[in-house]
Length: 323
Image: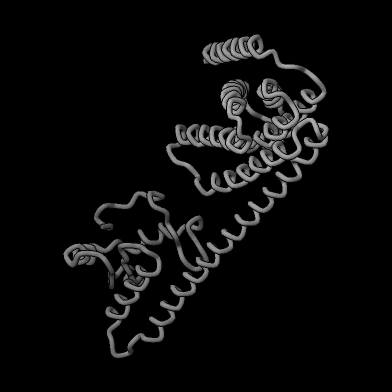
């Protein structure tokens, strides 16, 4: 097993080195002070998000966008690669290599297309769309489901940053302001927008929580209404049947079976239900479990306040006692 893992790691290293070497030979990126500062910035951002590796491509737009304003396009992919490769975190070596390879190839392609587009707004929008799109596809290919809410927040944030980058490049041009200034100011804008996105997320969560509280109040009111409307003229069985129907409505359970424990006679009485067929209820009524069986279910691990909640499959129940 270890040998296979080592072979996979070796293969990834070879592929990554070959891709970087070919790209370096063709592009010949310049190494200057901005390049070094960019690596440090990419390393810091990668380390910050190492505990949440999802959408790591999109999060590195925080590094790529300001670098595209002050550095040559040819060097940005190498900055991101080196910064991510050596980030602080518990990322396994194989995953680190795989993500580095995906990162390098994706950004090399996206930045190449970005450089071909003459309009700054379209260029940054295309870069943003490619990175976000590949992130979504990568996540979907793993889980076959996507957290669209999370992506919508990230998309909004990075779209605004992309437009901001385009405006800056179009109005000021990269050589007007020193690269170090951009690398210092750009995270401030990113953090502000990220803070707004998190605030919006918190408001959404509060709205959902308030909806749940209102729903719970309605259900509680339904139970109180049932208690207040319980008729003294109705039989115990009728009142308990209505209670079973109310419990089903409030909890969402399809089947409700109410049993009474007769301690004196040591037996269980099936007295009311909701959702069961009449024949099935009669069968259960005629084959009640012994009281000792019920006492076995009343374990401390299942106790919730003055009740007992037994999760499904927690205990093997005899088929003759259940529906």
